[in-house]
Length: 404
Image (tube, rainbow, N blue to C red):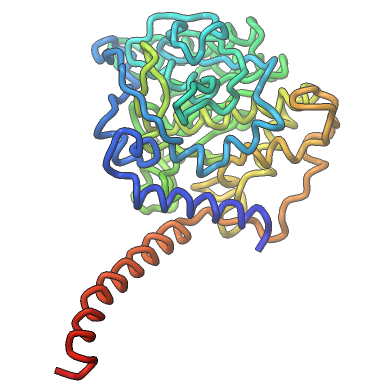
């Protein structure tokens, strides 16, 4: 078994143990997505301004399951995203959230809470007594507000385009499109090309936030397209099929990477904790990882960063790219550890050869729920045996170990 396969198995085992033992309180709920949704408010992706979330004063203390699954804290000794700016193109951004304080520009009223939530996944700083923190807790965030198309709830592609250009012009080296459009436009294609010319990495959810339709700009080849998986590593919204969402005309979503996206925990308007789900949430983990890589070696081109993320992903079984899971699940530790060592985290003195210095495992690690449920089954089995012996042994002693 390769080291990377072993690490993922251990992480999955840890998540399984927490799921088994941590289902009763708000503290334990931070590691159990089903419990989270019951005790914490949820953000929405609405752009029409009619589904505003209330400020949350609730917080969860334990480390959330996505951080355990992909090992975010293991990457932080190498990089925390210092010096990198991440653009968040969404419906708004609350710049007053304590976990993002002093590192936000382009803030705007965030009715749905979605933009603030994604910014937290990317860059929330560590708070004493709280297990949650962002993937790149020292990165800066640049917000850009997207408008709805007409009177619907889908994003206007030209508005998304303007948001991408705005964040790049203000220094974003990574751009997270949190609310994509369900149709393409010349302006959006041009904005993605502009970001690439400026050496910015564009990351987006493979399908729409308010629908399961193919999303743009994720459908464009040079954009890092991300699909969500749950705590078992299973893709969301596929219904067991071999493809993802189908749009008009039979198009299927293009997927580069997967990441946690089922009832994920993050901050929201007011600074309390919320939960959120979907491909855009998963994309935030990848955008944060891209920020770690860019801080670790600022000399890498946007193309090299994209290839680095693909090359170091924890792969599912079979050939890659897979139509559902792409190149596999993002691995923050693997992405930054694969870079040549410089003088310290984020010093930028590593090599400039993109993914060339990294050699993938000859037998790539699998993303599987097996270790989780094996542990759950084993623990349940031991508990049953202990309970049975607790009854039989006293009875046997009372009978002098004679048959009845």
